[in-house]
Image (cartoon, rainbow, N blue to C red; front, top):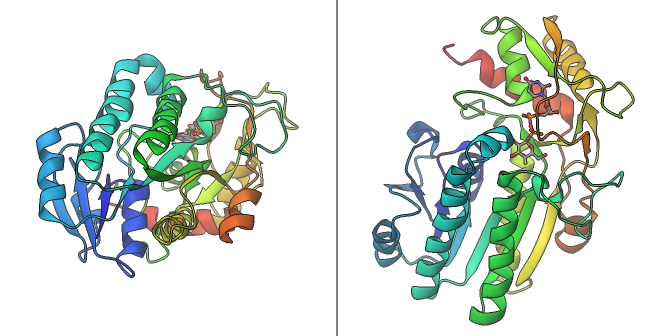
Length: 323
Ligand code: UFG
């Protein structure tokens, strides 16, 4: 059985939907940001808190867990700058509690959701796993701290782990049964689509004077189902003992500027956006684009879905929402 912590959240719920096809799954989530209805019915759901040792012990006592996948983190760069305590408490301290209980119950396989934010402002076209990590905000820092703990736990306690550094997760399940739903929403693609649906007055472009061809920030958008598929390959590599301590980037290897994303949304939906230029948002690097060659070479994973597809799937999901 696989324990998915944070399986009611955006990325966790998409992973669970794929994983239940292959494994028995138990989801632990406190529903602070996740949604009960997003959890696939085939998974067992336990409402509980990552930072609560008793909740964790109860789960490990009740189910024969062979691996843990951890999605239960706060992930907003801007919020982490305003409230670092929230990020270090949940993303670092609570994760340490989880690892402690895992060691107690001798569960040695762990998949960790990390982030491109660990790289800070890298000075390279394509970021690979050897690019220096130098986070510029508490969110990225909190994820890097856990990565460092994992390396030490691996050496001292024989923990097997795979760290997956996501670039910009986006899109929705192709069935439109689940998708991205944050409150408040801060991510670019959902904000544009909500504006196109008329539930927002405008889309603000945060900065048009960056050192990029059109002056707006460039990101590598990756479909949430591609992310889910990478997790399953990583899990198989851990369970088959093919891998024991690895870090992989997950991206498409293609960068799109904020303006290009807006244009693509307009093209896919056939609706014109109401756009305004605004000031830069603090903590935003100009460009973050992944090389995912390592995971392709080692596990055969490659992102299959491009930006159009990401937006098509997200659009279908957003049109179903009762805004
Ligand atoms: N942006 C706008 N207007 C908006 C919202 C976003 O111009 O209304 C811009 C941002 O400034 C940024 C780009 O669109 O340049 C993407 O912003 P998102 O908020 O969608 O995503 P981020 O790049 O800030 O962060 C996301 C995740 C992080 C992760 C990071 C890795 O939220 O957890 O991708 O690249 F670390």
